[in-house]
Image 1: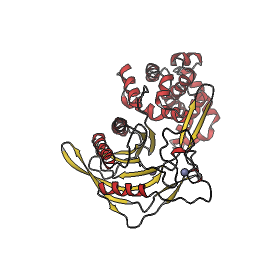
Image 2: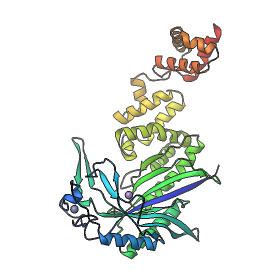
Image 3: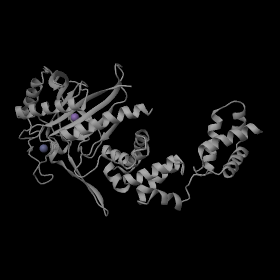
Image 4: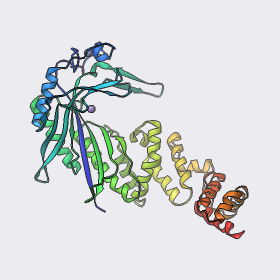
Length: 418
Ligand code: ZN
Ligand code: MN
């Protein structure tokens, strides 16, 4: 099936003003000593009165006009509450239902033709504090630098009109140029003055219904945006074809800096062994690998240091050769991750090889049948689900090591006999 890619971008731009958005603190925080550009307003003390920065409003109107937006006659600020340590007061002052600019557009070049990309809104808000995470073998802690809190931040939300990573890059470069031309921002991506979040989904060509949206955050170079979107634009159709249900989720993107991304790791695994179907690798990525990343709050680069592509391939081969069951293989992956040991060694040491011995499985089957009279009766009266339960019981009894196909067959045989 052919899929169409749908991309919408949200860009946060730090405005180049002298003072912060709602107080008189200097917004020139980058080279300042931590927590020196602060006052009761941007520290979020109770009882303070934020005052709007006129220059920031003017810059936002300039940008909105350049993006062909309608400028609101009436606008206001709102509190966006969320609990996160980078927010001193527990809410961000932003604009919710009355943005400064709305319903604009930006023309880009795509495939040699001009294309119009809708601009949903341009609004004004404030930046949050900066968290500095320290992690070593001996200790782990996070520091908060409030200097960035309250720096004017303009958000440009685009319509989901982009149809390829290349179009997204064109859009972003054009937008970036406009910011620099207007002089409203340094738009320095490395320093985080111009940051991009993307929503990307796919839909079968011609269908109005797109599959689950994936949000990619934390991209601070054109290259990172392009590569992250390329990755998703390839991953999602593959996953959909493999029959995986795409879930709505937020993914982080870590650009190289000597760090390997998901796509690279995937590629490396394919290189080590070209026989393994991409479908299988992607289901491992979507399931057990993601679980380990989430549970340990790490990126794939960290994972790769502990589980090399070669080790990963070894494990996949052991599983496909039926030396071990899928359940066991998932457990072994965690063990490899935790200990750095070879998958085959872990399986040997812990006696995790698959049980393919008929006698041994029959024995477990008999035990389960004897202990679960109700489920047996249910199955015989036509309840197919009872079989699943019984299979599960046999697997449990064998520590997940019995060959599932044999369990199925032997169970059916035994149940039919009596
Ligand atoms: Zn302040
Ligand atoms: Mn925002």
